[in-house]
Amino acid sequence: MTTKNINRILFLITSIVFCSCSNEIWYSDFKDFSDGWKSEDSATFSFNETPNSKGNILINIRNDNNYPFSNIFLISSLLKDGVEITTDTLEYSMADKTGRYLGKGFGSVKESLLTWKEDISFSSESKYSVTLKHAMRKNQNEFGMKVLPGIISVGISIILNREKNE
Image 1 (cartoon, rainbow, N blue to C red):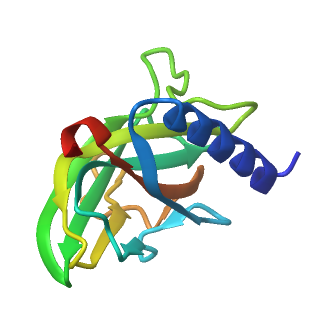
Image 2 (image 1 turned 180 degrees about the vertical axis):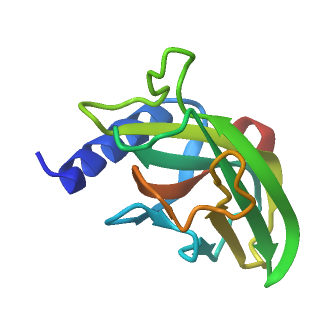
């Protein structure tokens, strides 16, 4: 089974799980990497025609067994109408103490769904974008890694909070 097919299956399963809940996925998109995540390859996701609604922004990370770390550092930015409204440096655990990856998935590919922002108020009159960059470096090295191996794709999902919007 190819990585692309595994990614499709993981996306389908994630979509089914979220659609069965009281909230709805309004937006979901991924950026795929063929040979790891290069430091100059920021992943930007733009979305327009946003409903007047509150929602959560989740970060999706797909990794395989070539990912050498137990965590990941990200720099995440949210822009509204081209103006940066927030930038965060984030750290997420990717593996437990035994080295087993925490994400869900089949075979060597795991997908982690990481909460970034909750209860963001979206306006239908605005255009939004999210930019993700990795900020990984090896211990004792002041410079970041040029290529982060084992990261297959990154993405975001916007989950609208139905009960909070009614």
